[in-house]
Length: 385
Image (cartoon, rainbow, N blue to C red):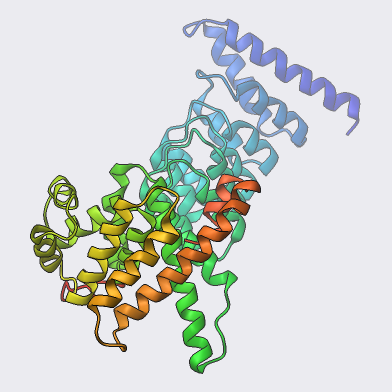
């Protein structure tokens, strides 16, 4: 087959498509021209069929049977028309994603404003490249379950996690899961014994501080979801609350106590105005905090509210001094926690000027560089120390 004949057939496809568009819907010649376009589907040259796909791709009046046939042609041909044709409905596109190779799936993922149903289909059965393409399409409608599906399928894929994390519509619960996985992967546990316990505690401290940073950045409407997620994962702990108080992240504490005590956030916020008062103690008791944890949270919240925004290290040191005068038992595990938090906050405060002098990109600092801490409420609804 000569290249000249092939180029002539490509030009003939363009002429037929132009003629078909010019003819009125009820013109008897339109049917004949459409039949000619249909015969192009049997042309042995992919270039000729690709020319037909290019002609029909953006046409909302393109014959449905032609579009469907081209969508299941060779990947390059199918991708050309699948990327933009307005003729197909969502259910047809979902089937196309399920039955097509990665190139065609990527084309569908690049469509203008993919619906939530189409995004869900790509996330559920799409190849890795298609899922990355979908995440890069900022016009794609994506509900929470789509992100959860992607995290379940590609939870060990660094590029996928990065792409999910930078999506502005990614749920805070998924972002939290990504942060914790990144930190866990970066810090390999020691072989065993006391060294392993120390390493696990360091990892938990980093995860707590990352949680606090994420909670500080997320919109207020997402805070209840984050707290519910922390409770379900066993990550809402006394240590996290104390670290949040030391960091001045009172919104996280307010939403946590509201969830645990089953009261409104506004009520908790009003009570938090006097963290050492009887109302606050009654609230914490209703939330299931142990008495020693309650004392630690009280003194930390009191001192942190008195301190300035840049005095976290000094504030937690003063809080530790106050707590030590109330804790007579040197084996008090909450006292040990307060000492750890004091050490962490002092170190972070000392390093903060250097961090401000060498700012990192926002996503990197929040995700892989996260250094940010209430151990989880067990099934009986109590918060463990």
